[in-house]
Image 1 (cartoon, rainbow, N blue to C red):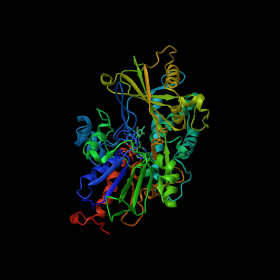
Image 2: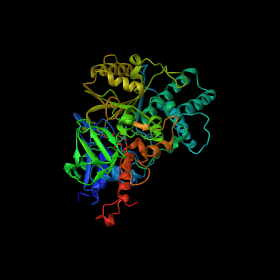
Image 3: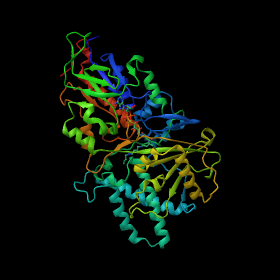
Image 4: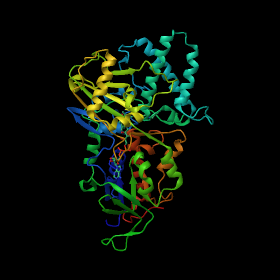
Length: 500
Ligand code: 6YU
């Protein structure tokens, strides 16, 4: 047994857990270790108590249907409710933007007309759908999704026959949709998101669903299936050395090409290591984390791909200020327009970037809790504030929206701080201007390129079409596990030699 390959997995998010689960189910890999920097499994899947269970990270299964491995696994573990698993739900195609009953409030203290909002929403989704058509176009006229949308909007405005006030209001609503898209893509501005590759992100059928008991049930179940002693928590890895010839006293005559060092000085030798740390961590540390350093193509991919911030702010109210059937509260700042440069004073106006609150459903389970989404630099600034400062700023916003200066402040606030999290440094990846799907593939490329590979890469940012999702993460972990499984001829596993 001692001669069998040793594999280390760095990171216990869905990619790392998925890889470990698949490898541990094969007899070829009894020497498997999962090293996780924090004290828990799940990574960016992170359910926490806020009275009730809320999601600080991933919220929905995007496209819950047969081809979605997160949906399949969650169904197998019995973590979803019947409606989510119904055939009917699985067949619904929403193109990534489920329609929830929404109310649009403006900073002038009024509720906007649903007809006006619907017209603008249709315009925005048509334009957004058009952005997906540039995938195979050799030369795009503008580099980013944001610039394309603004160019088209500027054209359309010329044909609007509305009065001036309605025109401004329509532009203000469009600006809200731009900010919403920043949350979806996890970016500061849609001007940072590359136009050409935007259509490469793939959507699966199925009406997005949540986990009634918390998304965290999924990594918990996956963890339980692994041998207990194989998972080490509070083990931040500081260096991955490869291409070496490391020896261990107890393993006379055997050498290992990989040595992984942890912050506490402990070292692990291995034949293979699967790195699943977030792109945000790699951006900050790759030059010292991997030795010898990454080849230029891979280092460039890390620098060029986008990794931005999207945070959540949960607010609990004694009484709802929104109507009973409302599931989404959207915020429009009437003095803003996508055609006018936004202000940059974060301290004075960070809260303007928070333009959507989800009403947690059903109220019998959650009480009166809103989940606000905020992306970009404003979100990163918000992370530096105290809970009390966030609560005060948002109370002020909500009083303006409702036109009620006496509205009771929320009872409680809780938020995510993904940009400050040292082992994440942001929320999820996107294909930034100056990068493409080829960079995602370059990031996923193992080292050395020829078998037997020593350093393998998984994680959401390495999945070319499902980046930024939990299913992308899980599939990437399986992909790298399969790469190792195919290296060893399992039918002759007594030889334990790489099949070259
Ligand atoms: C989804 C959703 N969702 C909201 C928010 C966030 C994310 N996502 P992990 O980070 O999980 O694991 C790595 C581990 O490594 C971790 O445990 C670290 O501690 C550890 N580590 C790091 N350094 C280490 C070291 N040195 N040593 C040892 N260990 C170390 N996805 O499907 N549905 O609703 C959302 C959302 C606020 C932050 C999300 C959602 C993204 C997923 O959470 C994420 O991809 C995976 O969990 C990542 O797993 P992993 O294993 O790779 O890393 C057109 C177009 C546009 C494209 N975008 C559209 C899609 C929209 C995405 N939706 C997001 C929306 C929400 C609300």
